[in-house]
Length: 314
Image (cartoon, rainbow, N blue to C red; front, top):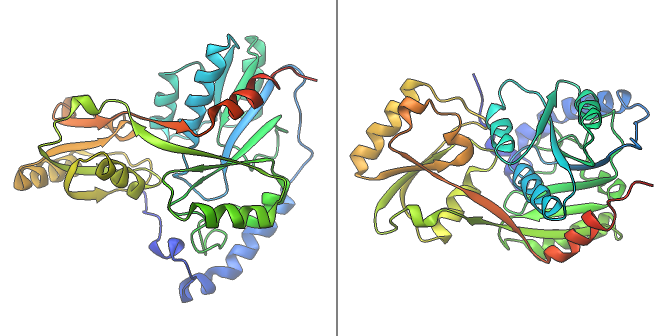
């Protein structure tokens, strides 16, 4: 059974529960440090990692697809690499729609597969904290809406590592809307004055498939449900109600029956994300519409420059 992200993780100020769990966070941080080893830098393939410090919902997969699109246009043989998790089949299926994906429970094994097939660039969807690979380029992804939540490390908060570790990274991506953007940038620069900050926004690719004069009931099981809802509202969808499930949630018949009953009561069409749609049995998905979205990179030329001009291995 998958659990939803605790609401107290995203409070601006940590509550009593966060402080009670704080000793466990210190233990988690210590164990992580003890696991660190000398990382391997490949000389045969360029490695790019899109990872996060805040757990989930930061736009890594969408950016990975966008990066591959840029590299493909420049005739650079590029693949995706993702650690295999049995409960993340949705993201694996989504990446496979856009290119070759190598998966393994150990990322370095997947990288060796990519090398054996003569790929020039490997884009890692997640893996920032991996102790095996020394990436040529790394990008720490954040969602502007959540930023760092209450600022605590798991389980007291939503962070995989201390936010102060931004001083060890070269690039940050801020995904979402302009909410609190300048304040976030200021905090990042205070931690690492030399870090490069890039921005992107989500946009809908298939809005023409929907009648915006109709009413909609929206649901999702992704890392940042509210970002999805905000995107629909910004695109003038009339969302009567919405329902949030845990990230990577696998829908059963009872879940879908409840969704259908609720939409019928509201006399509303059903709408969800492409990731969620890929997790629904095809026999049940006929009356469910899905939003196909992408990230639009602000000042994309800068990213093209860093991806293309630095493509050659030293």
